[in-house]
Amino acid sequence: MAENGDDDLVEYGFRRVIITITAVLCAMLEIVDTTIVNVALNNMRGSLGASLTDVAWVITAYAIANVIVIPMTSWLSQQFGRRNYFAASIIIFTVASFLCGNADNIWELVAFRFVQGLGGGALLVTAQTIITESYPMAKRGMAQAIYGMGVIVGPTLGPPLGGYIVDHFSWPYIFYINIPLGIIATLLTLSFVKSPNYGAKLKASQVDWWGIILLSSFIGSLQYVLEHGQQDDWFNDMIIVALSVVTVFGLILFIWRELTYEHPIVNLRVLKDTNLRVGTIMCFILGFGLYGSTFIIPIYTQSVLGWSALDAGLLLIPSSITTGIMMPFIGKMIQRGVPQTYMVAAGFLAFFLFTFWMQNVITPDSGEEHMFWPLILRGIGLGLLFVPITTLSLSTLKGKSIGEGAAFTGMMRQLGGSFGIAIITTFLARFNQEHRVNLIAHLDKTSFEVQKTIQQLQLGFMSKGYSTNESLAKAYKAIDLKVTLQSAVLSYMDIFLYLGALFLLCIPFILLIKKGKNKINPADAMH
Image (cartoon, rainbow, N blue to C red; front, side, top):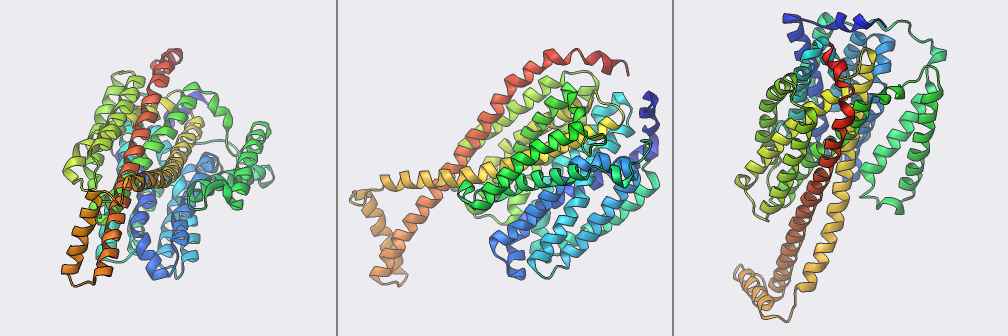
């Protein structure tokens, strides 16, 4: 492809504004839908008569489809033309949303969620590529900042929006809400988005079918293992063991196939770019932090503090607004040439301070006033991480490599989130058991304090009209609940501590990159 081909797609004025709005709208649709469902799971369970394990598939199916389709998006855009592929993805996503809302049983819902995920995964990466290419080189930091606002505010808007819809309407409306937005986005895409010219399309016989099969099997298996590992007791479960084997061999065969086949479905050679290699690892850690903290805080506020879904969701909003406000400033800083490695290091430091602070403020009765400032700090950290990491990853790529690079960063961010959530749920359960055992070991039945507490509780229950024995049983139950609550809080404290340590460990690695990166920078400057 000719060098000047890059600039054919740069847009100016009104067209660029419309394209940017369309792309951000689509990215937000996709991301809000990843988290909006979390709040509605209980209601779905009730109305579809499903078990908790079954209902978890509503999230799993979507995530698996997402992660399978993201690496293929660049190839699919080249096959069908970017505009057509993007429009088709929005249509698939919108139609699947309607079908999800109309599902009669849990497996219908899961099947339609899978289809919705296939449409949605494409939206994320294609939106990023379209935005990157519509802006001239010098303004790409700003372009990523605008895209980043959508991607970071999205996961946070999901729970409160879901909570509001479930409280005031019924769960199908969390899917119906996508329909008008999808229709608008489709019309805007068909009118304004341009397709780059990638040259000849492949014949059906040249398509990398084996690549598609291997990619789907290894990513699908990995995602299943991560989502179901904790509840199925990891490697004591035959399915988990079998799928782990599929993951490992699938990955090895997939890499071999893509590097040797003439028309690979995923172009692994693009990873020769040093910035992109470092960027994909950073994106993984960012996903870990972003989705991990977005997942752990609502669970803590709902299970330990007993908040409603809506309140739990609203708690995260100030943090997201902070990130949103920071994005344009960070875009400007990148344009002025502030080293991105320093910004990323500062972002990881802010994240470490956030987890450290949270570890100190959480108790069985924390209020939102305790968590407000730590969460603002989280917002600042995310702002400092997101744009610099993404711009750094794509900064030295050209032409169709931009789309391929965006696919890798998008996939790693999603996988980072899945790993984060899987590891956090596993450790929460493990820590909880440990703390419970330790706390019970320290409760000495013969000690005066314990006996006094039990007696007071028993008298309290007797005054409410229970018999002596019933009251004693209730007193023990109350103490047991206290122990459970305490061990849960201690487990959350541990999780925050380990998350913080992970972010601190990243800082030295980022500062090491800088030396190798300077060789590439003059090329950026020439644009």
